[in-house]
Image (tube, rainbow, N blue to C red; front, top):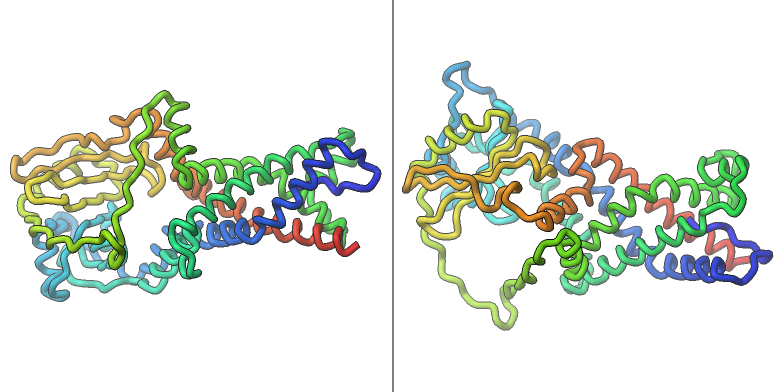
Length: 387
């Protein structure tokens, strides 16, 4: 977004900012392009997977008999077609024609008819794996031979540098003379320009209009990349930061231990509690049930009344089939301190999902803008150094 500096510019702080902007852009440009490109690819992941799995839609039974199977019966029927499958979670949609999703770990997903338990298969697994791979690349630069933590450090540094570039670019963009002609060139794309003038025009105009959403994406990216940024968010909200997470040792590495198989979790008695939860929250759009980590513990249940990235529209419950109770979970959004709520908002502000489809579109356009900024920035630098 830098101003096209000419030799007539006096060698002041402005020139120093320009050269710092140029050098930092050249140094981090490829990482920034990687983050922007991968972010653009996964911008509409949810909607695309729904479209790719459209062939899995079922025909609901007649009105009055359209009762979804309880988790125990559903699991039993799915296992008849897929022996040995042990689900770790279930997801139902309010849409009566939508299949039920059974997940085991991060990678194994099966779809079934929620009324009969008939197994519908793995859905668009190739696309699911594609988005998983792109997300891993976006966060950790996986499949490059770079260690996960190293990749996270590189993408975090790229995010930090890009934030500096956006800030310095706005400073360099600021017109010295606020004339209509100057603003027109700095704010609007002029298709009559070619070569260097076109690159300068695009870099400034696109940089200006994308600056605000890019800053939101970059700041939230920093919160997710760095512990100090995450802790700062909590402290600014007047909340105690959570303790740092301890990474579990990976299989095959020193310290990795063989874990005994977890005892089987019984699913009996969940049906009436699920029905009660749906009756209490009749405006639910998505229902997600997870299995507890040990027998006897309550089952976490999330009732989502909005889109995937709107945590304030979720209700977190705990189902205890042994006691026959249904109660609000301590993990519910309303029970969190301000720091935790802001952290949850930050996660989905980063992708735009906090504001639904419109927010996703703004984030996608900002990612596209970042790619154009890298391209025009490289082009301007090439023309400058080539003479």
